[in-house]
Length: 136
Image (cartoon, rainbow, N blue to C red; front, side):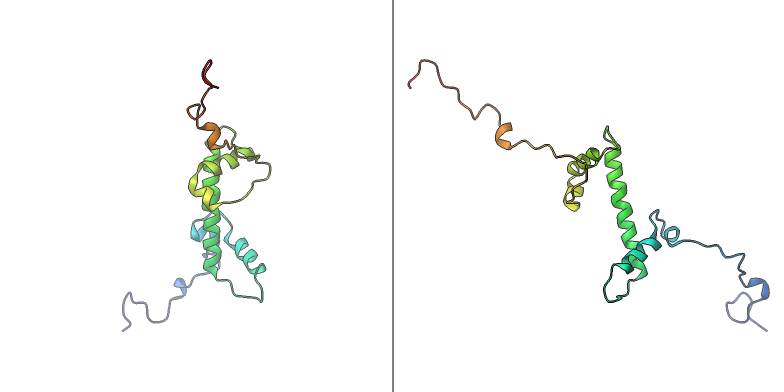
C-alpha cells in the first residue's frame, strides 16, 4: 500500500502542472523590483571581456542598487520647489551628505553649486576700521 500524503511515488495525472496553469513571472517581479533585471543582465553580459560569466544574482543586485539610488534622488528632488529641473537634482545631491559622497558626478544642465569662501562669511569681527584722529 502506498504512503498517504507522501511526496514519493508516481504523480497522478491531475497533479501534473499544465502549460495553462503556469504563470509567467519576470525576474524583476520575483525580486520585488521595478527596474528590469533581465535587461540589466543583458547589458552586464555585453560589457564583459573574454565572455566572462555573469551570475544571475549580479543583475538582481545591480538593479536593486540602481532602483534605490533613483528613489533617493527623486525623493530629495521632489521635496524641493523645482522638482523637475536639473538644478534641483544638483542641489539635492549637495544637500545630502551620504548621497554627495557616493555620487561624485556632474549633472548636465545642473548649474554650479553655490559656494562662498569662509573668509568672506567670517563676519566683520576680523576687520578693523581705522580710527579717525588716531596715530598714523
